[in-house]
Amino acid sequence: QRVAAPPSFQSLFQRTMAAQSNATQTFACALTGQSPLSDAVVTPSGYVCSRRLLLAKLAENGGVDPFDSSGTRRLDESTLVDLAAGGEIGAAAPPRPPKATSLPSLLGMLQAEFDSVLLELYDTRKALEETRRELSSALYQNDAAVRVVARVARERDEARGRLEEFLSGDAVAMARGEAVVVPEEPQKRGREGEEEEADAPAKKAKSNDDMEEEASDDLTKIPKSDLAAMNATWKIVTKGRKSIAKLKRSKEEATKCEAKLTDLADGKEKKVNLGKSSAKAGVLCMASARAGDDREYIVTGGHGKAAIVYDVSDGRMVATLSGAGGDVSAVHAIMLSDSKTMMVATGSADGFARLYSVPLGGEDEPALLGSAELGEGAPVNVTVHPSSTADEARVLVGSSEGAIELYKYNGGDELKLVTRLESEGDVKYTSGCMHPDGFIYIAGTEKGDLIVWDLKTQVVAGTMKGHDGNSVDFIAISENGYHVASSSGASPGIHVWDLRKLKLSATLAPGDNVGTVHSMAFDPTATYLAYAGEGGTAVCVAKDWDRVVCTLTPAKVGGKKGKKKESSGAPSGGVVWGGEGFGLKEGEGGKVWLAVGCDGERPVRFWGVE
Image 1: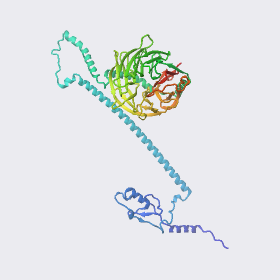
Image 2 (image 1 turned 45 degrees about the vertical axis):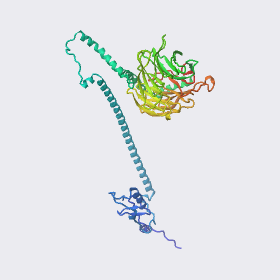
Image 3 (image 1 turned 90 degrees about the vertical axis):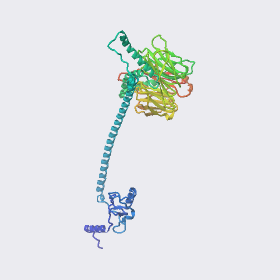
Image 4 (image 1 turned 30 degrees about the horizontal axis):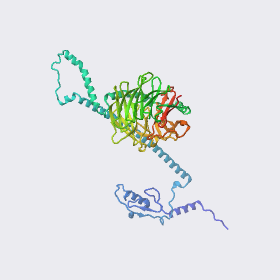
């Protein structure tokens, strides 16, 4: 049998051309550029499209012909003409593009697509970077505009003040056109004229004093003499605050500082009982002061109706400041410039604020300089302003009735109320704290708000809301003036605020080994925050708030659980830093200690004190 010969190349080519001539003719869609499989239509304007895609486009643009440049011609489905080539519609699949007929062509197409994606990603990143630069520039311009507006507002207020001064003097008479008495013969001056001229400065000074005294009757404003003294102190303390703000430690220095804190936890705890043994146990508040000879003192208040001054360096009680008619719930102390006298302010449940002078290193006894009863409510915080001197002292008192009161002592036996700043509405204060520069006071309310008062202008600078509407029981401000820590006994967690932006920066969750927080304190370099609770005291790192360096756990009293009495109301207590500290420069600093006291326990616990 004879075997058929294989077809030649010419015969194969002819067969292929014949098949193509009989195949279905294909069209390219004007919308996508691809060949419609089975629904090719022609529009009245002569464009070939896929019916499905064209109808979707018409539904999207409201029935307007997408190929009409004027955008006014209407197009509906009834005007479309179906296309069919080479027999039944859809009888043959559209041919593949010429470039996709081989594996090298496919690889080339994939490479081209990959390159285009990379180029598009590059363009996107470039646009993102440009947007970020524009946003940064806009934020900077906004910040600058805010500063300019604040400066203009300040200058406006100062101009208004000068105008009021001008109108309050002889200028009023001149403006009204009243006659001004002028001596008839100023050339002739006898003995009486000389005496009158000599007495003129005294009369003028007396007139100014009378005007200032008259102006001081307005309790909504701080007298100008007090503002001047506070401003002079602000210029001094601001330099120290800025040096703290610029502090930057290397990793080696930070490790050394944290080693000091670790030594506290590994060291021995020292307990000191302060106050009357017959009084109810509990430390409700605590403050510290450091003398020029590096002697350190703490002041505590409690249920014994007195404040106790304790010399940490010698380990002895220096003074008992009595006279309160109730629990001493707030204390504050500063050392005067001579470093031989300490001024202590106390606030007690009987509604009084008291100021004491405590001589140190001599035989003189402490003296009550003055006391004042608040108009309403009880003190929640007392602060001796850093502008105070031995002859003239100022005490800021936060009242539970939603007011900040400024008292002044300049002799006598009482504190004189010179300013009372009240919050609008029914606001109750539960805590307070003064900024290190002496011109900002922050008050905590029973509704979870932190109200920021600007004492320079006597207005509210802002309000920070937190703690789920529960009362703010304690406030602490860092020495650099940037961070504010607040706590509430009714809600878990410590809120850390950025005072520059008036926003919440972080929320700390004290562990079970700390419990409900009753007090907090930043160290003098604003590097660490110590917060104390009923279970213990923890120290965390500023700006890295969740990192706890050490935890100080007190030994059980008598080795029995439940020995401590439960306190009623908000948690109370105190925690203070002491020692040479961590220093602002390499080689500075030294020993560090912490003192903690809380309501329901009689002793004050020291870590780092032998």
